[in-house]
Image (cartoon, rainbow, N blue to C red; front, side, top):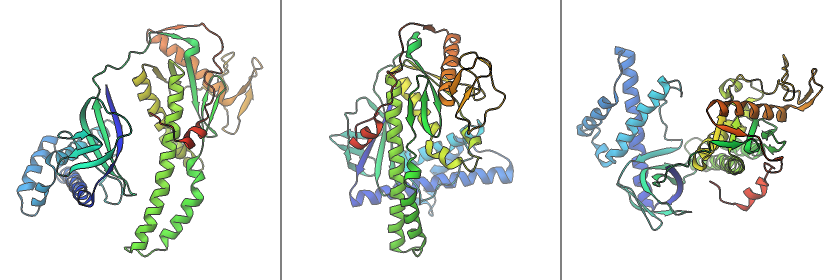
Length: 399
């Protein structure tokens, strides 16, 4: 089973200079290949294959004006070309946007597919040498690829993809009804399960907005190209980095809690791209990062042998009564609770949606040939909200 682990690197000054040259070379090759493909389509209406771009990379090293590419790692340059081809393939399959040119002011990265070793808190990188690393856990298995990245705050990381040689556990074929949880995603509460537990949305961006606004104002007053402007830019980047790290930490703890306490998780599929067109809700939707939470649930379910069921995006989970099945014609976003006119049941909007999501998920599990047994008592306490805030402050490890 493939697993990726991110570790911190502490290169020396000479190694930092070498890595920055490698980043620049990879970025130049990526941008040059993208420009070539755009020019070929615009002028001749023809596409360029991956094989042609790889052959052109060899020719570039023979030219006098681009002979400096010989000092860069050849496989890292080839990976940049292949990453661009993958980006085009995802674009043609309508899974991603059109590839953009890379800039030196954002996050930098390069990939090594081979010749990388990790021994005693040191990572060997081609053309760089042995770099001091901080491994917070023992990494077992064969290293497949290593992606080295440089954050806007000047920190170096390595994401190590390895094959531990183990098969992914098979999800159970018989699932208890009480071991299935339906989850509704929201803004006031990030995740609401069908047993009544609501996991609060910390709103990390909103909490950091005052600090970020103050530092961005200071950055706007600095002269472009000055050392003080670079210091101010670094302060702004650190605020963004802390916010992103806090959000990832919270979502890791929440997703691990939900996966540990269930055998099957049913979540709704949201069209976030369309929802972001609402200017009032767009900042809060981006801060919630529903897609990232579902992504974490997906690979954790695969790791631990659990089922993840996605609902149809048009399934009316909020407007359907979970008791009698009657459906409302309209339900405004500001209505947080409502009463069914057919059976008289009073519903909390989010909990009712989570119950309907679970019921629909059970139908999909049965349609897939699984057996869902109705046994056991109430599992409301099993999915109770963990003290994630205290865990984040204590700095407990997450997966």
